[in-house]
Length: 402
Image 1: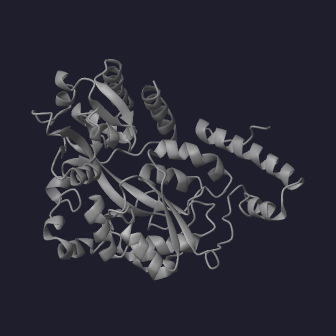
Image 2 (image 1 turned 60 degrees about the vertical axis):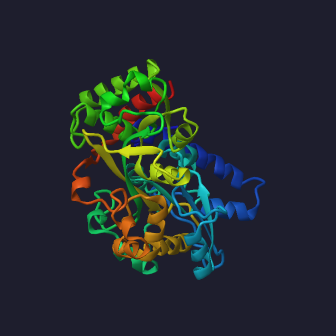
């Protein structure tokens, strides 16, 4: 196989090589014993002559279903395990929606679907919500479908501050789902001295009972902030100094686990008494406990701020259905209902006013509708070049995976 014109990024190079191999295998299969329908399905997503991927024919008019992949604890749910706003969507539109709790960590989900994405194949989700740094990667690589805004009048409701990210000006291919903060948590029943600083997290009384996130930008972002680093413009040396701290705390046994969304299990079973976590999850856990068993705080040195975002994978054959779903959740009244349950920052204009109607106290919750003072305490991890992302993520995974 020739290496001519392969990208310099080693991750991208490997994906291209895998894609070319898979394309040759697919051509061999098409000449063999696979059925005609399967052959058409594969051919529909094949790369065009210039190497770009083409989406399959949209079957939304005849296939009234939509599959939505998302993180745990991220959609309103009743005592029976149903999702009221999603059930209302199905009743209103006639589109049967399947909600798939399939994302525990950006990188693990990416690893699971990247080979199919590189070929433009259906990954089993017509829309998925990933953190924006990962969303930007998909968009750069041509792995998403551009919206038909005629199907999404509520697109106009995205808050102005989130309308023009550098990876998707005007939000032509992505729309934020929820935002949130990473900070500290501690068990109020068993930890009597608050955890407010990075040094507090490393206290002897918490040894072996600390859990941190497998999301590099949040865990290392919080550690760097605790070391006095501006995470909007940090250097490689500052990154590696924070990584050295993480490595030492894992090796010493101060940190029990480095996890994705499943970190909540460690808190519930009290294997962990403190950690670096996400704001909304803690509010949900406290709601289930019936009191503030876990205290979420923004560190004195600051926390991180992020957004998880809707995209439509290139291989989805139900694009219009996915757009209809996204549009539904950009209705301010629906957005307020979701915010009341998930307790993350809603990106929808008008949701605050609708939240006041539901519960005035809800609208004052700083983890959902943060004011200027709260926002001044959080910071966004700076964008990484492809080379930095490959290098830093590999170094971080070396610690996570031992």
